Image (spheres, one colour):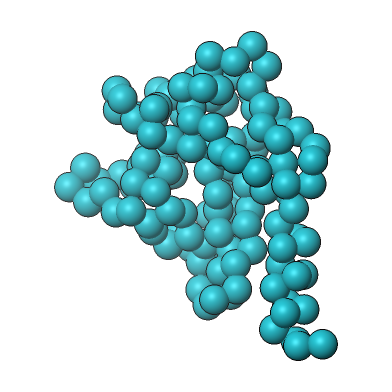
Length: 134
């Protein structure tokens, strides 16, 4: 067995909690019971209050662009950091942490890993982990 294939299969297995398809914030806010189907077949529910909080962090129109849950990537190459991808997702995390700069809106950003518990504590149903090997 190729060790690289075994590693990729293991990473896929530990990421089975990720959504099969990520809806937009607008779609979730319009839903009576906002949820998403996960890769393992189970469902993940979002708290309405949390969705509203995220909407309040965004500029008008951004709720149509934000896919949820926001994926907090734990990347093997970035020890001590996690990555967030997507301009609107980065904006949410920056505003949540009080580090938003309107003159710098990157498509992806690295954050110190010690901030993970704070992000997860404040947005427990609208964020999730993904483990990435690069």
